Length: 326
Image (cartoon, rainbow, N blue to C red; front, side):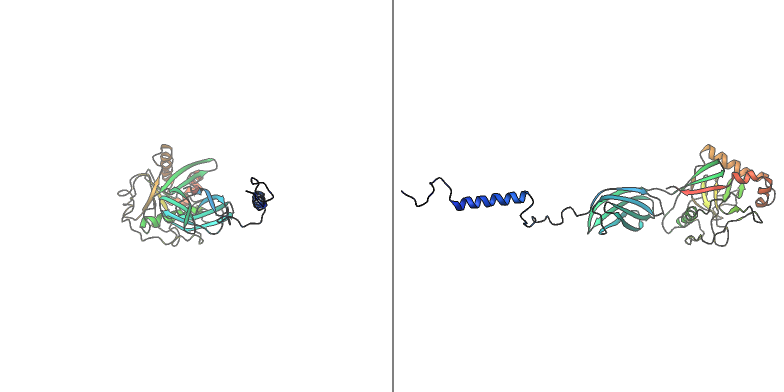
């Protein structure tokens, strides 16, 4: 049977060859990035979504603005900070760059804290840490002759008496108010009181109460002991006696159990215990006992007798600094 085609039966027609050639050309153009065709579905904006690779804790302290650093790519203002666990107030995420964000909030309780970065309701990454009890490092002495006393503050529950007084103490610590004050109340082997008096070398009297109107802690709860700690051995307590005006900065270190007895029942006198110090450390205990015994050298008015009679004693009982470390 004959055919009208000029090609042998086994040879493809020109239309088929043309179609194959066009397909091969299109494939080559796509492989080289040409062709000007539309991007595949879902490819638009690929790689622009924020990605969080890590979150680390930079600083974490009870009652203080705490900082966490998030690292990643394509970070923008759509990424927000959420917290879980303990209350962490005023949370915010400050974008530093497209690869780093600074996360800030203020823990108001002790316990587990969870930090989450969220975008449009989707959690990108979480970070867990623990808010520990506030710790304060007190350095006393002068020059290179110094010792460190470690305080652990028990903040109690929010809204409680103990919490109010603990916050009051930490406010003065973080305001550097206690720097340069000295232990002014010395009761042999029993207690040392501080946080009120300082030395003014060019003034009369040279020893006087420290006052600064710029320090204005939040109002504290009424002076009651119900539900709070007691003035047991090695506790730190806040005093109800104002230093000046309404400035309640005075505190005590109890060397013995002073909840009842010698000091006219310090619990009943409303000295509010807010934590403890490392008095069980033999060196620290002896340091404070020696300091308490300086009262033997004082005659009638300790504030007027200390400086002229025993200037070295005043230096030994001076607080160089107090720092909240946790």
